[in-house]
Length: 109
Image 1: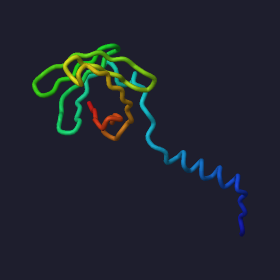
Image 2: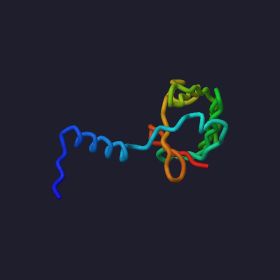
Image 3: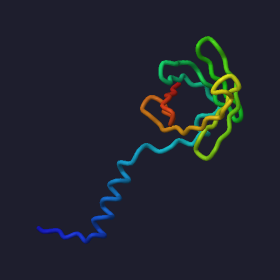
């Protein structure tokens, strides 16, 4: 049996297959709020708590309190004592054991 595909039909198949193998979807930040998470970024491990407008990070024997805002599908945080007070925004994708952010950090419960 010989099957003939038009260029359009073949394009649709390629696109449909590509969508099935696309990267993990970005998580809605609301899914992460109101919880304390273990985190690891590089050699640093600790805990982070995301609230509606506040964030608390604990590592290296210190606690850092900062501000949090949601920007689309990103969480944006700023800490007076970290990153010279500059805001950093990142998104999360779901993993088998928790979540990974676009800066390379992982969080889990």
